[in-house]
Image (cartoon, rainbow, N blue to C red; front, side, top):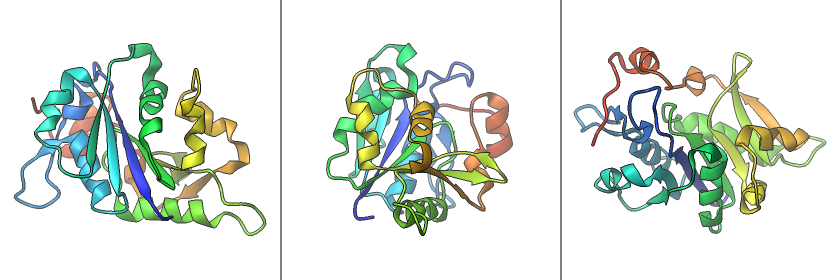
Length: 212
């Protein structure tokens, strides 16, 4: 892959978690560093690995709280659409902004940032294809037979999100048929979801806190 960017879907209200998931306090990547919002942790992890740029789609209510953490390569995209559009709406906001990217990493904010090795493996699978088939349009990670996040897609696979009434990503991947493949990874982190306080407790060892 030539140019890779990431889209972080971080516009959820976080009602079940107790606050905006984009602002969930996340430990620093290095020992002794300052904690930062989870949305920024995702962006920093991808910029430190394979991504040239990261689009973080957020609600207007948390946009200004994240501005202080933004650095070059991180683009905040404010979203004011109705709640019922869900992740499909977030992707529709981000898709016109991917520029000349060849591949796109799509991750919901409510998972731990993926490791560089895991994303590299997914991108390699996106390039490789099967011996008797064209390279896929999308690759999903699996661990012990269960699907997880993030998903990597060729830029053309997001064309549907430039059209009216785009589907949720899950349905779109299903519609791609054999052009969406699964890649088994040795990374249990792809299965973690941070939807409710006990999920955060399991991963971080403490209850969720949010950085204003």
